[in-house]
Length: 79
Image (cartoon, rainbow, N blue to C red; front, side, top):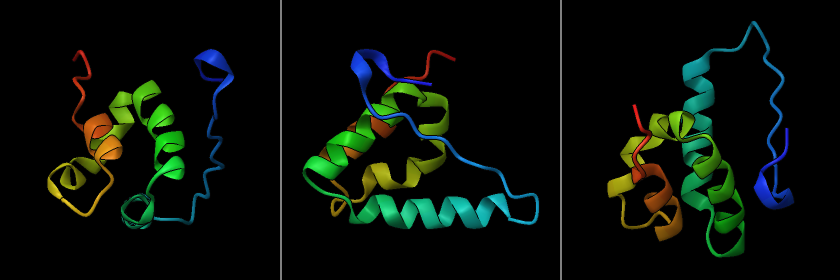
């Protein structure tokens, strides 16, 4: 799966033994550490999949999180 304009596409292999909430916590912590160009790259995926971005709504109010990530998480999902 590609993003419009040939952007980054994320492919995740699901491990049945993993806990989805542990994965969300790990991803949330990773998103907190991204800034600059790395954050802008991930924003493309968050905007492409706004339904998934909503899982990280807590980051939208954290000032330490890159503004581009906060904005992508806050975007309306259309639902």
